[in-house]
Amino acid sequence: MPKSKALKTPKKRTSLSVAGAKKPLARTRVAAPKSATLALPSGRELAVQEHPEGERLSIHGKGGKLELTIVLTDAGPRLVIDAAAIELRAQGTLAVDCERFEVRARAEASIRAPDVVVEATKGNLDLRANDFVRVVGEQIRLNCDRPEEIPEWMQKMLEARFLHAPAEKPTVPATEVTGDTDLVAEFDRLAREHARRTPES
Image (cartoon, rainbow, N blue to C red; front, side, top):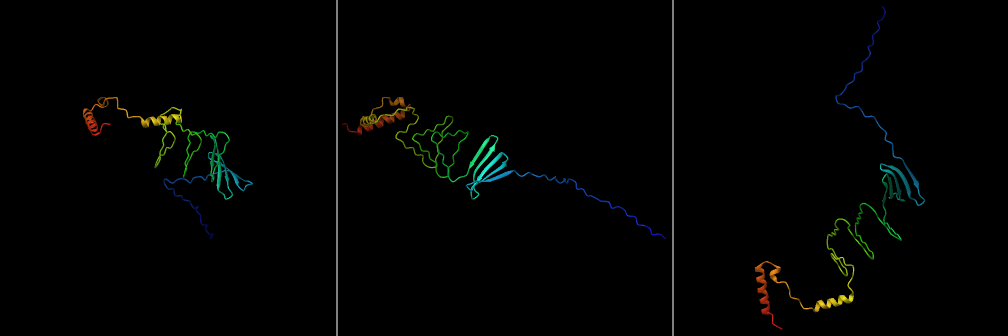
């Protein structure tokens, strides 16, 4: 009797699906920014790298510290300097033209020149200090547009005249200065009392 062959049934693959499951995102490769370096004779290193705003040029010192950065943007180059000290020297004029000018000093700020002019063409000029505000000068003029100066001989003459000139009595009656009759009466009483106590010369 011939042997019966067992029938093989193909196995069905079952897959489970979870409601709300998201398909895995396809992996995208992000291109690394292009860069190039160049060793300088001084021992520094110049690096050029792509930047979101444009190309960026940076100079590193011998110890790897960043010293200078230049970013070439569509609006123009942007310069960043990291240095221990910066000196600017010009035989002629050193002009700065910008939208906003800010100076932040951690210790001290000073401006020295034979002649200094600070002018606010629009708006206010604010001077603020945590402690005292000192103004020292030969003459301090407030709301005075006269540029001429009084000669020294005239100053001495005026000072002598003011020192030896007798005190002038007021020409305006007290009743026209104030409308308070009680105050005028009090002034009259004090004046009579002062005249009574002061001996005539």
